[in-house]
Structure formats: C-alpha cells, structure tokens
Image (cartoon, rainbow, N blue to C red; front, side, top):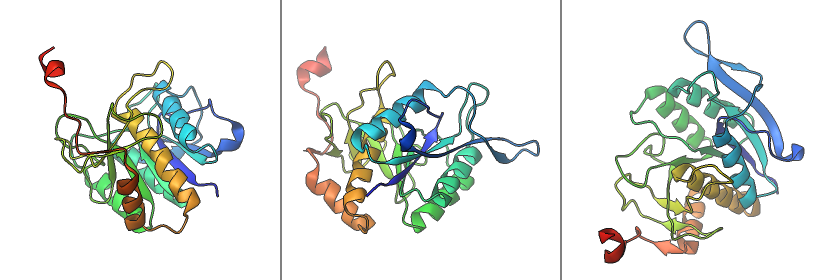
Length: 231
C-alpha cells in the first residue's frame, strides 16, 4: 500500500514524477495572513534532501510538497500551520516537519492538535542538545533527534532522556552535500514510520509506538566514552 507523506519544508523537485502527489506554496498574504499559491521557483536544498531521505526509507510513498520557505521569505508559524492543515486535507497519513521553533505559538499548536485528532502522524525535529522546540514538544508529536549510533534503517528509543525531550533518534547524516542534523534524522524516521503504516494501514498510534519501541536498535541516550569527552 502507498502512503501519502506531507513534507513541510522548502520544496523539492529531484524525485521521480510518480512520487509526487501534489505541491503548493504557503506565502504571506497582503492582509498579513497566509495564502496558498502554486509551487513555483527553485526549491531549497534542505527540502530536496528531506524528500530524498524519506523516499530512501519508503520508495512507494506519494509525497505532498508543502512549501513554507523559499529564497524570498522565511517561514512563519502561521505558514507552517496552514501547510499542516493542507497536508491533512490532501490525505497525508504522516507529516514531516524537519524544523523547530523556540517559542510556542497557538496557531501552530492548534493545527497540530487538529491533525493528530484525525489520526495523522506528526514527526518533528528536536535538537540533540538544548531546550525543547515546537512542534516537537507538543503532546502526541514524534520528536526526533540525531543519533550517530544508528546505521541506515535503524532508530533508537531515547525515552526523553536528552535535554530537548526527544523520544526517538535516527542517523543525522545528510543527503549528498546537505549538512546533517536532527532535520535529516527526522526525514529518515518519517520514512520508517510510513513504511510501517504501509504494511499495517489500520495501526493505531499505540500500535505504532509499540512497534517502534520493540524494534529500536538502541535504547536510552548515547553515552560518550571518557576519551571522546576529554578530546
């Protein structure tokens, strides 16, 4: 079964045509709000890398390109919220959010609550160090950090033991020349989640969590060796 995945990011074009379901941009409106527009222009390398890693993990997925960042404007919480709602309306089963805001915003919090209530899985980036970020810190969101212990296809169950509160980890390596980090780990984890849902489309959030915990390659945070800390 093919699963629709929303990618809320800077756009992408470097994927097979059959893998794209639909694309849209979310841009500032003249009245100060957000308007949906055609997805045109050159995408950002970050979005290209995220889409590549998602498809690497689940090649049969259909992607929704929800562009909230471009060479002309930076994303706002309202743009991210509008993109999340659109992905839900287009039938996304999973939404990838390889981004994080330092401050909670009601417009984004409410959008995440709406899609979670509809059974959509939200996967969001959380830093390996530092304070929690949003939407990763919202209840019900799968928060992912980079975990260098993980090889391709592996993930870790962090149990919220790191300072950002992330529950899961994946390899932080970037795609191509794109820098690595939590964003790339989130993309990999989104693909892993989507692959499970393709095999078990009626799985509940509890069933998904049980599967992820049972099959995790690592449990608990990564403990650096003394030699590594001193070097």
